[in-house]
Image (cartoon, rainbow, N blue to C red; front, side):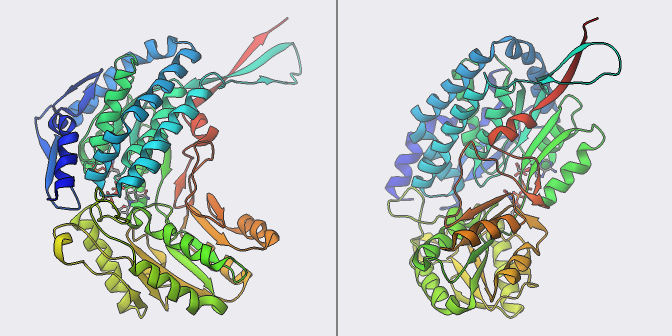
Length: 499
Ligand code: NDP
Protein backbone atom coordinates (compact mmCIF):
# COMPACT_ATOMS: atom_id res chain seq x y z
CA UNK A 1 0.00 0.00 0.00
CA UNK A 2 1.43 3.40 -0.91
CA UNK A 3 1.97 6.14 1.66
CA UNK A 4 -0.81 8.25 0.17
CA UNK A 5 -3.33 5.44 0.65
CA UNK A 6 -2.31 4.68 4.22
CA UNK A 7 -2.43 8.40 5.09
CA UNK A 8 -5.93 8.63 3.62
CA UNK A 9 -7.02 5.60 5.61
CA UNK A 10 -5.70 7.28 8.76
CA UNK A 11 -7.69 10.43 7.92
CA UNK A 12 -10.98 8.49 7.77
CA UNK A 13 -10.04 5.97 10.48
CA UNK A 14 -12.87 7.16 12.73
CA UNK A 15 -15.54 6.21 10.18
CA UNK A 16 -13.83 2.89 9.35
CA UNK A 17 -13.65 2.01 13.05
CA UNK A 18 -17.33 2.64 13.67
CA UNK A 19 -18.51 0.92 10.46
CA UNK A 20 -19.60 -2.14 12.43
CA UNK A 21 -22.29 0.05 13.99
CA UNK A 22 -23.83 0.93 10.64
CA UNK A 23 -27.41 0.14 11.52
CA UNK A 24 -28.72 3.61 12.33
CA UNK A 25 -32.18 3.37 13.83
CA UNK A 26 -33.95 6.22 15.57
CA UNK A 27 -30.80 8.31 15.39
CA UNK A 28 -28.69 5.69 17.17
CA UNK A 29 -26.00 3.66 15.41
CA UNK A 30 -25.50 0.06 16.41
CA UNK A 31 -24.63 -3.43 15.23
CA UNK A 32 -26.89 -5.75 13.27
CA UNK A 33 -29.39 -7.80 15.27
CA UNK A 34 -27.49 -11.01 14.46
CA UNK A 35 -24.12 -9.33 15.12
CA UNK A 36 -22.78 -10.38 11.69
CA UNK A 37 -20.35 -8.24 9.77
CA UNK A 38 -19.47 -7.87 6.09
CA UNK A 39 -15.96 -6.87 5.05
CA UNK A 40 -15.65 -4.01 2.62
CA UNK A 41 -12.62 -3.78 0.35
CA UNK A 42 -10.53 -1.16 -1.39
CA UNK A 43 -11.03 -2.35 -4.99
CA UNK A 44 -7.70 -0.83 -6.04
CA UNK A 45 -5.62 -2.92 -3.62
CA UNK A 46 -7.90 -5.79 -2.63
CA UNK A 47 -7.30 -4.89 1.04
CA UNK A 48 -10.15 -5.03 3.53
CA UNK A 49 -10.69 -1.52 4.88
CA UNK A 50 -13.62 -1.96 7.26
CA UNK A 51 -16.45 -4.24 8.30
CA UNK A 52 -20.04 -3.07 8.14
CA UNK A 53 -23.06 -4.52 9.91
CA UNK A 54 -24.96 -7.23 8.04
CA UNK A 55 -28.51 -6.04 8.65
CA UNK A 56 -31.35 -8.54 8.89
CA UNK A 57 -35.13 -8.49 8.61
CA UNK A 58 -35.22 -7.70 12.33
CA UNK A 59 -33.12 -4.58 11.77
CA UNK A 60 -35.39 -3.51 8.92
CA UNK A 61 -38.37 -4.00 11.20
CA UNK A 62 -36.84 -1.79 13.89
CA UNK A 63 -35.90 0.82 11.31
CA UNK A 64 -39.41 0.93 9.83
CA UNK A 65 -40.89 1.24 13.34
CA UNK A 66 -38.56 4.16 14.13
CA UNK A 67 -39.36 5.79 10.80
CA UNK A 68 -43.09 5.41 11.46
CA UNK A 69 -42.76 7.05 14.87
CA UNK A 70 -40.80 9.91 13.33
CA UNK A 71 -43.48 10.77 10.77
CA UNK A 72 -45.48 12.86 13.26
CA UNK A 73 -42.62 15.07 14.47
CA UNK A 74 -41.30 15.47 10.91
CA UNK A 75 -44.63 16.37 9.33
CA UNK A 76 -45.62 18.74 12.12
CA UNK A 77 -42.69 20.97 11.22
CA UNK A 78 -43.45 23.88 8.94
CA UNK A 79 -42.20 23.47 5.35
CA UNK A 80 -39.67 26.22 5.98
CA UNK A 81 -38.32 24.40 9.04
CA UNK A 82 -37.99 21.16 7.03
CA UNK A 83 -36.21 23.10 4.32
CA UNK A 84 -33.73 24.52 6.85
CA UNK A 85 -32.77 20.97 7.86
CA UNK A 86 -32.09 20.10 4.23
CA UNK A 87 -29.99 23.26 3.78
CA UNK A 88 -28.04 22.23 6.88
CA UNK A 89 -27.40 18.74 5.47
CA UNK A 90 -26.08 20.38 2.26
CA UNK A 91 -23.70 22.53 4.29
CA UNK A 92 -22.55 19.58 6.38
CA UNK A 93 -21.82 17.59 3.21
CA UNK A 94 -19.65 20.47 2.01
CA UNK A 95 -17.92 20.86 5.38
CA UNK A 96 -17.08 17.15 5.30
CA UNK A 97 -16.36 16.99 1.58
CA UNK A 98 -12.77 15.83 1.88
CA UNK A 99 -13.69 12.98 4.23
CA UNK A 100 -16.67 11.91 2.13
CA UNK A 101 -14.66 11.98 -1.10
CA UNK A 102 -11.83 9.96 0.47
CA UNK A 103 -14.29 7.37 1.76
CA UNK A 104 -15.99 7.12 -1.63
CA UNK A 105 -12.70 6.65 -3.44
CA UNK A 106 -11.47 4.04 -0.96
CA UNK A 107 -14.73 2.12 -1.11
CA UNK A 108 -15.62 2.44 -4.80
CA UNK A 109 -12.25 3.06 -6.47
CA UNK A 110 -13.15 6.14 -8.53
CA UNK A 111 -10.56 8.96 -8.81
CA UNK A 112 -10.65 11.41 -5.92
CA UNK A 113 -11.35 14.35 -8.22
CA UNK A 114 -14.52 12.59 -9.42
CA UNK A 115 -15.58 11.78 -5.86
CA UNK A 116 -15.00 15.39 -4.87
CA UNK A 117 -16.33 17.37 -7.82
CA UNK A 118 -19.03 15.04 -9.06
CA UNK A 119 -20.35 12.83 -6.26
CA UNK A 120 -19.91 14.99 -3.18
CA UNK A 121 -20.48 18.40 -4.68
CA UNK A 122 -23.61 17.40 -6.62
CA UNK A 123 -24.93 15.59 -3.52
CA UNK A 124 -24.77 18.89 -1.60
CA UNK A 125 -26.46 20.74 -4.47
CA UNK A 126 -29.25 18.15 -4.57
CA UNK A 127 -30.06 18.78 -0.90
CA UNK A 128 -30.02 22.53 -1.53
CA UNK A 129 -32.31 22.19 -4.54
CA UNK A 130 -34.90 20.13 -2.64
CA UNK A 131 -34.57 22.36 0.45
CA UNK A 132 -36.03 25.11 -1.72
CA UNK A 133 -38.91 22.88 -2.79
CA UNK A 134 -40.14 22.38 0.79
CA UNK A 135 -41.98 25.72 0.72
CA UNK A 136 -43.18 25.33 -2.86
CA UNK A 137 -44.85 21.94 -2.85
CA UNK A 138 -48.52 22.74 -3.14
CA UNK A 139 -51.82 21.42 -4.38
CA UNK A 140 -54.23 23.13 -6.75
CA UNK A 141 -57.72 24.54 -6.67
CA UNK A 142 -59.82 22.50 -9.08
CA UNK A 143 -62.43 24.13 -11.35
CA UNK A 144 -65.15 21.45 -11.12
CA UNK A 145 -68.56 21.48 -12.87
CA UNK A 146 -71.01 19.63 -10.63
CA UNK A 147 -74.54 18.99 -11.98
CA UNK A 148 -75.96 20.16 -8.66
CA UNK A 149 -74.65 22.16 -5.73
CA UNK A 150 -71.69 24.35 -5.10
CA UNK A 151 -68.33 23.08 -4.07
CA UNK A 152 -64.88 24.36 -3.40
CA UNK A 153 -62.51 21.60 -4.49
CA UNK A 154 -58.79 21.54 -4.04
CA UNK A 155 -55.93 19.04 -3.89
CA UNK A 156 -53.37 18.41 -1.20
CA UNK A 157 -49.97 16.88 -1.87
CA UNK A 158 -49.33 14.56 1.05
CA UNK A 159 -46.26 12.48 1.89
CA UNK A 160 -46.45 8.73 1.39
CA UNK A 161 -45.13 7.79 4.84
CA UNK A 162 -42.11 5.54 5.30
CA UNK A 163 -40.13 5.03 2.10
CA UNK A 164 -37.32 2.56 1.35
CA UNK A 165 -34.35 3.72 -0.69
CA UNK A 166 -32.16 1.01 -2.22
CA UNK A 167 -29.03 2.30 -3.91
CA UNK A 168 -26.15 0.71 -5.84
CA UNK A 169 -22.39 0.84 -5.57
CA UNK A 170 -21.47 2.97 -8.58
CA UNK A 171 -22.42 6.39 -7.11
CA UNK A 172 -23.16 5.47 -3.50
CA UNK A 173 -23.41 8.92 -1.90
CA UNK A 174 -24.78 10.68 -4.94
CA UNK A 175 -27.66 8.32 -5.68
CA UNK A 176 -28.51 8.10 -1.97
CA UNK A 177 -28.79 11.90 -2.02
CA UNK A 178 -30.88 11.90 -5.20
CA UNK A 179 -33.47 9.86 -3.35
CA UNK A 180 -33.09 11.01 0.25
CA UNK A 181 -33.41 14.75 -0.38
CA UNK A 182 -36.75 14.68 -2.25
CA UNK A 183 -38.17 12.00 0.05
CA UNK A 184 -37.46 14.24 3.05
CA UNK A 185 -38.58 17.44 1.32
CA UNK A 186 -41.96 15.84 0.67
CA UNK A 187 -42.32 14.96 4.37
CA UNK A 188 -41.52 11.25 4.33
CA UNK A 189 -39.25 9.35 6.69
CA UNK A 190 -36.81 6.87 5.20
CA UNK A 191 -34.94 3.62 5.53
CA UNK A 192 -31.83 3.67 3.34
CA UNK A 193 -30.23 0.41 2.15
CA UNK A 194 -26.89 0.95 0.37
CA UNK A 195 -24.97 -1.74 -1.49
CA UNK A 196 -23.01 -3.92 0.90
CA UNK A 197 -19.91 -3.15 -1.20
CA UNK A 198 -20.07 0.62 -0.65
CA UNK A 199 -21.86 1.57 2.57
CA UNK A 200 -19.34 3.95 4.14
CA UNK A 201 -20.59 7.25 2.72
CA UNK A 202 -24.19 6.21 3.43
CA UNK A 203 -23.20 5.75 7.07
CA UNK A 204 -21.63 9.20 7.07
CA UNK A 205 -24.70 10.68 5.38
CA UNK A 206 -27.00 9.20 8.04
CA UNK A 207 -24.68 10.61 10.72
CA UNK A 208 -24.73 14.06 9.08
CA UNK A 209 -28.55 13.99 8.90
CA UNK A 210 -28.63 13.35 12.63
CA UNK A 211 -25.96 16.03 13.20
CA UNK A 212 -28.20 18.47 11.35
CA UNK A 213 -30.76 17.81 14.07
CA UNK A 214 -33.47 16.00 12.12
CA UNK A 215 -35.95 14.36 14.49
CA UNK A 216 -34.67 10.92 15.49
CA UNK A 217 -35.91 8.21 13.14
CA UNK A 218 -36.52 10.42 10.08
CA UNK A 219 -33.39 8.97 8.46
CA UNK A 220 -32.57 5.33 9.22
CA UNK A 221 -29.88 3.19 7.69
CA UNK A 222 -29.82 -0.58 7.33
CA UNK A 223 -26.64 -1.86 5.72
CA UNK A 224 -26.43 -5.45 4.53
CA UNK A 225 -27.05 -7.74 1.60
CA UNK A 226 -29.75 -7.15 -0.99
CA UNK A 227 -31.20 -10.62 -0.58
CA UNK A 228 -31.69 -10.15 3.16
CA UNK A 229 -31.92 -6.49 4.20
CA UNK A 230 -33.09 -5.28 0.78
CA UNK A 231 -35.65 -8.02 0.38
CA UNK A 232 -37.03 -7.42 3.91
CA UNK A 233 -37.47 -3.74 3.11
CA UNK A 234 -39.33 -4.50 -0.09
CA UNK A 235 -41.65 -6.95 1.60
CA UNK A 236 -42.28 -4.84 4.70
CA UNK A 237 -45.96 -3.86 4.98
CA UNK A 238 -45.06 -0.60 6.74
CA UNK A 239 -43.13 0.73 3.74
CA UNK A 240 -45.18 2.75 1.25
CA UNK A 241 -42.70 3.06 -1.57
CA UNK A 242 -39.37 1.74 -2.78
CA UNK A 243 -37.11 3.95 -4.84
CA UNK A 244 -34.45 1.74 -6.40
CA UNK A 245 -31.44 2.18 -8.65
CA UNK A 246 -29.63 -0.90 -9.91
CA UNK A 247 -29.78 -3.65 -12.46
CA UNK A 248 -32.85 -4.43 -14.54
CA UNK A 249 -32.83 -8.01 -13.21
CA UNK A 250 -33.02 -6.84 -9.59
CA UNK A 251 -35.65 -4.26 -10.59
CA UNK A 252 -37.81 -7.09 -11.94
CA UNK A 253 -37.39 -8.97 -8.65
CA UNK A 254 -38.46 -5.87 -6.76
CA UNK A 255 -41.60 -5.50 -8.86
CA UNK A 256 -42.54 -9.11 -8.07
CA UNK A 257 -41.64 -8.96 -4.37
CA UNK A 258 -43.50 -5.69 -3.83
CA UNK A 259 -46.69 -6.84 -5.56
CA UNK A 260 -48.38 -8.35 -2.47
CA UNK A 261 -48.13 -5.05 -0.58
CA UNK A 262 -48.74 -2.97 -3.74
CA UNK A 263 -45.90 -0.61 -3.02
CA UNK A 264 -45.30 2.38 -5.19
CA UNK A 265 -42.04 2.04 -7.10
CA UNK A 266 -39.53 4.24 -8.80
CA UNK A 267 -37.03 2.13 -10.71
CA UNK A 268 -33.91 3.50 -12.33
CA UNK A 269 -32.43 0.48 -14.07
CA UNK A 270 -29.90 -0.52 -16.67
CA UNK A 271 -29.02 1.05 -19.97
CA UNK A 272 -27.27 0.54 -23.28
CA UNK A 273 -27.23 4.14 -24.34
CA UNK A 274 -26.57 5.18 -27.93
CA UNK A 275 -24.11 8.00 -28.57
CA UNK A 276 -24.26 9.17 -32.20
CA UNK A 277 -21.53 11.08 -34.03
CA UNK A 278 -22.73 12.75 -37.22
CA UNK A 279 -20.09 13.73 -39.80
CA UNK A 280 -20.84 17.44 -39.36
CA UNK A 281 -19.87 17.37 -35.66
CA UNK A 282 -16.83 18.96 -34.07
CA UNK A 283 -15.02 15.63 -34.25
CA UNK A 284 -12.27 16.42 -31.75
CA UNK A 285 -14.90 17.46 -29.18
CA UNK A 286 -17.03 14.44 -30.01
CA UNK A 287 -14.08 12.08 -29.48
CA UNK A 288 -13.36 13.58 -26.07
CA UNK A 289 -17.07 13.41 -25.24
CA UNK A 290 -17.39 9.82 -26.41
CA UNK A 291 -14.49 8.75 -24.20
CA UNK A 292 -15.91 10.48 -21.13
CA UNK A 293 -19.35 9.07 -21.95
CA UNK A 294 -18.14 5.49 -21.61
CA UNK A 295 -15.09 5.58 -19.35
CA UNK A 296 -16.36 7.78 -16.49
CA UNK A 297 -16.42 5.70 -13.30
CA UNK A 298 -14.73 2.83 -15.17
CA UNK A 299 -17.83 2.47 -17.36
CA UNK A 300 -19.92 1.54 -14.32
CA UNK A 301 -22.56 4.14 -15.12
CA UNK A 302 -26.18 3.33 -15.89
CA UNK A 303 -26.32 5.98 -18.62
CA UNK A 304 -22.87 5.21 -20.08
CA UNK A 305 -22.66 5.91 -23.80
CA UNK A 306 -21.73 2.31 -24.48
CA UNK A 307 -23.03 2.04 -28.06
CA UNK A 308 -21.12 4.58 -30.12
CA UNK A 309 -22.57 5.06 -33.59
CA UNK A 310 -20.08 6.80 -35.88
CA UNK A 311 -20.90 7.91 -39.44
CA UNK A 312 -19.07 5.69 -41.89
CA UNK A 313 -17.39 8.66 -43.63
CA UNK A 314 -15.45 9.55 -40.47
CA UNK A 315 -15.44 6.14 -38.79
CA UNK A 316 -11.84 5.00 -39.29
CA UNK A 317 -10.25 8.33 -38.42
CA UNK A 318 -12.52 8.68 -35.39
CA UNK A 319 -11.82 5.18 -34.09
CA UNK A 320 -8.06 5.77 -34.48
CA UNK A 321 -8.30 8.87 -32.30
CA UNK A 322 -10.47 7.10 -29.76
CA UNK A 323 -8.14 4.14 -29.45
CA UNK A 324 -5.03 6.25 -28.95
CA UNK A 325 -6.78 8.46 -26.37
CA UNK A 326 -8.21 5.39 -24.58
CA UNK A 327 -4.76 3.82 -24.49
CA UNK A 328 -3.38 6.97 -22.82
CA UNK A 329 -5.86 6.93 -19.92
CA UNK A 330 -3.89 6.73 -16.69
CA UNK A 331 -5.02 3.84 -14.49
CA UNK A 332 -4.23 3.87 -10.80
CA UNK A 333 -5.42 4.14 -7.25
CA UNK A 334 -8.06 6.84 -7.08
CA UNK A 335 -6.20 8.59 -4.28
CA UNK A 336 -3.00 8.97 -6.30
CA UNK A 337 -2.55 12.25 -8.19
CA UNK A 338 -2.90 11.91 -11.93
CA UNK A 339 -5.15 8.84 -11.84
CA UNK A 340 -7.81 9.12 -14.52
CA UNK A 341 -9.41 5.71 -14.10
CA UNK A 342 -9.69 3.42 -11.09
CA UNK A 343 -10.49 -0.27 -10.73
CA UNK A 344 -13.81 -2.04 -11.17
CA UNK A 345 -15.82 -2.48 -8.01
CA UNK A 346 -15.04 -6.16 -7.44
CA UNK A 347 -13.29 -9.20 -8.83
CA UNK A 348 -16.68 -10.62 -9.79
CA UNK A 349 -17.56 -7.48 -11.76
CA UNK A 350 -14.24 -7.63 -13.62
CA UNK A 351 -14.83 -11.28 -14.51
CA UNK A 352 -18.31 -10.40 -15.71
CA UNK A 353 -16.84 -7.68 -17.96
CA UNK A 354 -14.15 -10.06 -19.20
CA UNK A 355 -16.90 -12.49 -20.13
CA UNK A 356 -18.30 -9.79 -22.42
CA UNK A 357 -14.84 -9.10 -23.88
CA UNK A 358 -14.56 -12.77 -24.77
CA UNK A 359 -18.06 -12.87 -26.24
CA UNK A 360 -17.30 -9.81 -28.40
CA UNK A 361 -14.24 -11.47 -29.90
CA UNK A 362 -16.07 -14.82 -30.26
CA UNK A 363 -18.91 -13.15 -32.15
CA UNK A 364 -16.48 -11.54 -34.61
CA UNK A 365 -15.92 -8.00 -33.29
CA UNK A 366 -12.41 -6.54 -33.39
CA UNK A 367 -10.84 -5.48 -30.10
CA UNK A 368 -8.86 -2.40 -31.11
CA UNK A 369 -7.37 -1.69 -27.70
CA UNK A 370 -7.54 -2.52 -24.00
CA UNK A 371 -9.45 -5.18 -22.14
CA UNK A 372 -6.46 -6.54 -20.26
CA UNK A 373 -5.45 -6.68 -16.60
CA UNK A 374 -2.49 -4.34 -16.07
CA UNK A 375 0.65 -5.77 -14.47
CA UNK A 376 2.92 -4.40 -11.79
CA UNK A 377 1.67 -2.57 -8.75
CA UNK A 378 -1.91 -2.57 -10.03
CA UNK A 379 -2.08 -6.39 -10.12
CA UNK A 380 -3.87 -6.84 -6.76
CA UNK A 381 -6.67 -4.42 -7.76
CA UNK A 382 -9.64 -5.07 -10.04
CA UNK A 383 -8.17 -3.06 -12.90
CA UNK A 384 -9.00 -3.49 -16.56
CA UNK A 385 -7.64 -1.29 -19.33
CA UNK A 386 -10.22 0.67 -21.36
CA UNK A 387 -11.41 -1.40 -24.30
CA UNK A 388 -12.73 -0.35 -27.72
CA UNK A 389 -14.45 -2.79 -30.13
CA UNK A 390 -15.10 -2.15 -33.82
CA UNK A 391 -16.77 -4.31 -36.48
CA UNK A 392 -19.67 -4.66 -34.09
CA UNK A 393 -23.06 -5.86 -35.31
CA UNK A 394 -26.28 -4.78 -33.62
CA UNK A 395 -27.17 -8.35 -32.68
CA UNK A 396 -23.97 -9.07 -30.75
CA UNK A 397 -24.23 -9.39 -26.97
CA UNK A 398 -21.73 -6.55 -26.50
CA UNK A 399 -24.10 -4.30 -28.47
CA UNK A 400 -27.28 -5.33 -26.68
CA UNK A 401 -26.51 -6.09 -23.00
CA UNK A 402 -25.41 -3.76 -20.25
CA UNK A 403 -21.71 -4.53 -19.66
CA UNK A 404 -21.17 -1.99 -16.87
CA UNK A 405 -17.45 -1.73 -17.42
CA UNK A 406 -14.86 0.12 -19.54
CA UNK A 407 -15.92 -1.38 -22.87
CA UNK A 408 -16.96 0.76 -25.84
CA UNK A 409 -18.64 -0.82 -28.85
CA UNK A 410 -18.36 1.24 -32.03
CA UNK A 411 -20.92 0.76 -34.81
CA UNK A 412 -20.79 2.39 -38.24
CA UNK A 413 -23.89 4.00 -39.80
CA UNK A 414 -24.80 5.67 -43.09
CA UNK A 415 -27.84 7.90 -42.58
CA UNK A 416 -30.02 9.58 -40.00
CA UNK A 417 -33.15 7.44 -40.30
CA UNK A 418 -31.08 4.29 -40.11
CA UNK A 419 -29.15 5.36 -37.00
CA UNK A 420 -32.29 6.49 -35.17
CA UNK A 421 -33.92 3.13 -35.89
CA UNK A 422 -30.86 1.21 -34.72
CA UNK A 423 -30.35 3.40 -31.64
CA UNK A 424 -33.97 2.77 -30.64
CA UNK A 425 -33.70 -0.96 -31.28
CA UNK A 426 -32.83 -1.74 -27.68
CA UNK A 427 -34.74 -3.05 -24.70
CA UNK A 428 -33.30 -0.07 -22.76
CA UNK A 429 -33.98 3.65 -23.02
CA UNK A 430 -32.13 5.47 -20.29
CA UNK A 431 -30.08 8.05 -22.18
CA UNK A 432 -28.62 8.96 -25.55
CA UNK A 433 -26.16 11.44 -26.98
CA UNK A 434 -25.69 13.03 -30.36
CA UNK A 435 -22.96 15.18 -31.83
CA UNK A 436 -23.72 17.52 -34.72
CA UNK A 437 -23.33 21.16 -35.72
CA UNK A 438 -26.73 21.17 -37.46
CA UNK A 439 -29.21 22.70 -35.03
CA UNK A 440 -32.24 21.33 -36.87
CA UNK A 441 -30.84 17.84 -36.86
CA UNK A 442 -30.02 18.08 -33.16
CA UNK A 443 -33.64 18.73 -32.16
CA UNK A 444 -35.10 16.40 -34.79
CA UNK A 445 -33.00 13.44 -33.65
CA UNK A 446 -33.36 14.26 -29.93
CA UNK A 447 -37.15 14.11 -30.35
CA UNK A 448 -37.00 10.76 -32.13
CA UNK A 449 -34.71 8.95 -29.70
CA UNK A 450 -36.46 6.76 -27.15
CA UNK A 451 -34.54 7.77 -24.04
CA UNK A 452 -35.23 9.57 -20.79
CA UNK A 453 -32.31 11.96 -21.34
CA UNK A 454 -30.76 13.12 -24.61
CA UNK A 455 -27.52 15.09 -24.56
CA UNK A 456 -26.53 17.16 -27.60
CA UNK A 457 -22.83 17.93 -28.12
CA UNK A 458 -22.07 16.82 -24.56
CA UNK A 459 -22.65 13.79 -22.39
CA UNK A 460 -23.29 12.94 -18.72
CA UNK A 461 -24.43 16.44 -17.73
CA UNK A 462 -26.66 16.28 -14.65
CA UNK A 463 -28.41 18.90 -12.60
CA UNK A 464 -30.71 18.52 -9.60
CA UNK A 465 -33.47 20.31 -11.53
CA UNK A 466 -33.41 18.03 -14.61
CA UNK A 467 -35.37 14.76 -14.24
CA UNK A 468 -33.40 11.57 -14.82
CA UNK A 469 -34.82 8.13 -15.55
CA UNK A 470 -35.62 5.66 -18.23
CA UNK A 471 -37.91 4.59 -21.02
CA UNK A 472 -38.65 0.88 -21.58
CA UNK A 473 -36.63 -1.61 -19.48
CA UNK A 474 -34.59 1.25 -18.02
CA UNK A 475 -37.30 1.74 -15.46
CA UNK A 476 -40.13 4.02 -14.51
CA UNK A 477 -40.54 7.16 -12.46
CA UNK A 478 -37.83 9.78 -12.30
CA UNK A 479 -35.02 10.81 -9.99
CA UNK A 480 -34.24 14.53 -9.67
CA UNK A 481 -36.33 17.52 -10.63
CA UNK A 482 -39.88 18.22 -9.58
CA UNK A 483 -40.93 14.79 -10.84
CA UNK A 484 -38.95 12.96 -8.19
CA UNK A 485 -40.52 15.10 -5.49
CA UNK A 486 -44.01 14.43 -6.82
CA UNK A 487 -43.17 10.72 -6.83
CA UNK A 488 -42.71 10.87 -3.08
CA UNK A 489 -46.24 12.30 -2.58
CA UNK A 490 -49.83 11.24 -3.04
CA UNK A 491 -52.68 13.51 -4.05
CA UNK A 492 -55.84 14.03 -2.05
CA UNK A 493 -58.89 15.82 -3.51
CA UNK A 494 -60.92 17.70 -0.92
CA UNK A 495 -64.56 18.63 -1.70
CA UNK A 496 -66.14 21.30 0.48
CA UNK A 497 -69.90 21.73 0.06
CA UNK A 498 -70.74 25.42 0.01
CA UNK A 499 -74.57 25.24 -0.01
P1 NDP B 1 -28.01 -4.93 -8.17
O1 NDP B 1 -28.99 -4.26 -9.03
O2 NDP B 1 -28.29 -6.33 -7.80
O3 NDP B 1 -27.81 -4.08 -6.83
C1 NDP B 1 -28.28 -2.78 -6.61
C2 NDP B 1 -28.83 -2.63 -5.20
O4 NDP B 1 -29.93 -3.53 -5.00
C3 NDP B 1 -27.82 -2.98 -4.11
O5 NDP B 1 -28.05 -2.17 -2.98
C4 NDP B 1 -28.18 -4.42 -3.81
O6 NDP B 1 -27.73 -4.81 -2.56
C5 NDP B 1 -29.69 -4.36 -3.88
N1 NDP B 1 -30.33 -5.66 -4.10
C6 NDP B 1 -29.84 -6.74 -4.75
N2 NDP B 1 -30.73 -7.76 -4.76
C7 NDP B 1 -31.81 -7.31 -4.08
C8 NDP B 1 -33.07 -7.87 -3.74
N3 NDP B 1 -33.40 -9.10 -4.08
N4 NDP B 1 -33.92 -7.12 -3.04
C9 NDP B 1 -33.60 -5.86 -2.69
N5 NDP B 1 -32.45 -5.27 -2.97
C10 NDP B 1 -31.55 -5.97 -3.67
O7 NDP B 1 -26.59 -4.80 -8.84
P2 NDP B 1 -25.30 -5.69 -8.58
O8 NDP B 1 -24.49 -5.02 -7.56
O9 NDP B 1 -25.61 -7.12 -8.33
O10 NDP B 1 -24.60 -5.56 -9.99
C11 NDP B 1 -24.90 -6.47 -11.04
C12 NDP B 1 -25.07 -5.75 -12.33
O11 NDP B 1 -26.12 -4.83 -12.23
C13 NDP B 1 -23.89 -4.91 -12.75
O12 NDP B 1 -22.93 -5.65 -13.36
C14 NDP B 1 -24.54 -3.93 -13.65
O13 NDP B 1 -24.68 -4.47 -14.93
C15 NDP B 1 -25.89 -3.72 -13.05
N6 NDP B 1 -26.00 -2.49 -12.25
C16 NDP B 1 -26.63 -1.45 -12.81
C17 NDP B 1 -26.75 -0.28 -12.12
C18 NDP B 1 -27.42 0.86 -12.75
O14 NDP B 1 -27.41 1.96 -12.19
N7 NDP B 1 -28.03 0.68 -13.89
C19 NDP B 1 -26.19 -0.09 -10.78
C20 NDP B 1 -25.58 -1.29 -10.25
C21 NDP B 1 -25.49 -2.43 -10.98
P3 NDP B 1 -26.33 -5.56 -2.38
O15 NDP B 1 -25.36 -4.96 -3.32
O16 NDP B 1 -26.03 -5.25 -0.97
O17 NDP B 1 -26.61 -7.00 -2.66
